[in-house]
Length: 209
Length: 270
Image 1 (cartoon, rainbow over the protein chains, first blue to last red):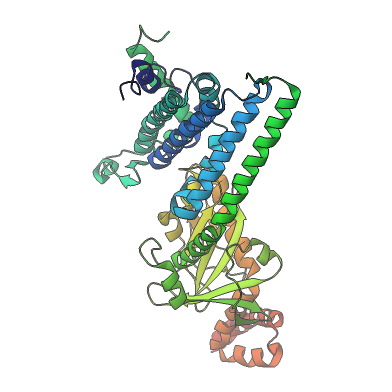
Image 2 (cartoon, each protein chain N blue to C red; image 1 turned 180 degrees about the vertical axis):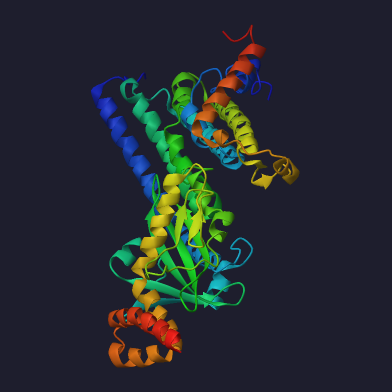
């Protein structure tokens, strides 16, 4: 057990949550952070799906890493990711149809998520299955965390709701408060991501270079 | 033994084996799950029809309520005939071919209604929906809209209840007998024919407007037929209908047009 949670493995899991966050530090996966964060619920579902798929594709590529021909490694990685995404979406359709309807296009978007390719290429190709699994979970959650933060602000100020429930009380609207339409626009999520990156780097001035 | 993973032969074999394994795996998964998936889709479609009838599809046993309340019909040669074939889950190509399905049923409030499937295009992909009209076929009782891939939080909001409920109780036809029900920019609705669109999703809202217009126009024979029947209240009309129309719908519609005028004239004379 102690070996399973050695410092190195712990670092593989925790560093993408903070100092090596895929969005704020590596600046990967920005495109999907724009598309699915206008409300909290799709942001969370997308974050979790990416976490699961990153973890398992990391494990599979890590198991195959010594046999993969170097010249077609990107293709092999893509095939693995695409096959996993397809199987997951088929399973969702068969057993949790409601969720699959909600995810619709996002499942397809996961295949092209740069974080997946980045982790496969940078980590799973050099490390064993268990650290790769932790790395995948860590990166997925790091990505999900930023999505949730952006989704929270966009839904709160854009619609006055959270998870679809009204949270800004009616008397505020009566007193002249209005929802910020700008928050609903994709451009605003870039601005929020920028602000999050700014805050994150200002806080970790020494560590992040 | 150390494999030479850079050789051409190895690379080709690896790719071939990988593709075969993955193809087999995907084919297996797809065929193993096909039946469950199709049942889910059929069930969901029935739920959408019930949703247009004002039921909350998340709160009821869709299959049971559908079997009890809704009947699938075909509209052919001016008549509705019960449809016993396999339940359809998409109606776009059927409507194009002129195969018009009409669902008869009762709404959650107990009103008789006809549910018409409609299809259209949004910003990124297809839209579809079901529109429930009342017994005299001139008012909307409820709607259900959904989309393939509209933007979450913007165009995707057409699938939310507040948007769909705006259509309830709206008249369908304007004075000229054309479909007048439409969707306009959010907050710009002036009269009862105009429904507020979704803020920030003008193109999807326009897509819904076009879908409602085209969809209801495709069912013009079905809807128009009874529009004529509604005019029967006027005795002069009734006579005229029987004499001149003889059941032929187009002629009937024309006659109705002139009939309306005639009615007004008689009213004035009286």
